[in-house]
Image (cartoon, rainbow, N blue to C red; front, top):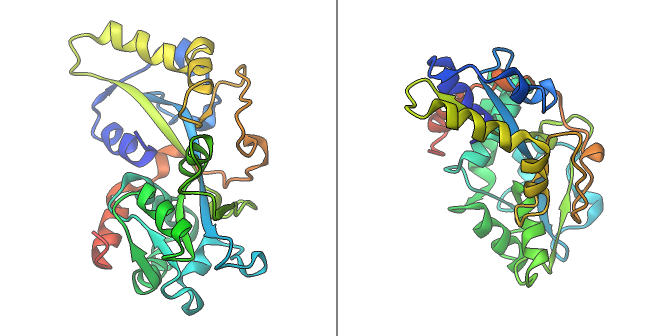
Length: 251
């Protein structure tokens, strides 16, 4: 699950500590300091854009710019999904509460709302809307198949430690209430192990494995070139994100 959801469960004290061997398989920045869960896959925030509707020269340098009046009616997103909420949590962590509230207000005024990132991708590709906020793998998965919903679009990576370059982590942990705790520990250990990460790297997922010993040769932008902001995964404030989005009528 996305980092804010994992952090919420962790804050309630519901996770059992993970084995050190499990935690050591992934760089420390992808796990909380308490070691109660670990990241095992990552995906990059991107702006998908219609190549006929948007000139490269007008692409925003920051995701925050999408709240400006010039983007009115030109940006799509899926606010009810955990993906977008994780992106908002990164904006909140970097920009602060007031700036995030202003950004969400601008998006609410400018944006076209869709129920799911695949629908955002389809809408941008069809020219219904110029741009959309998604994760990278939606576009790359379509490219790997027919390309029907990505042939008229491309991806813009914000980079430069912008909140729009946020790399979201899928995490796994073991609940204290589990009656199969030993098996659960083994499964989480497998997810972050070389063999588990190789299975991820070779799969249809097209998400980034986090074990540094595993090569990832998929046709996606290299992880080393993403330039994401450095965010402590346990600092992502899911409940505050929900509150701010509700205040702007996005949930």
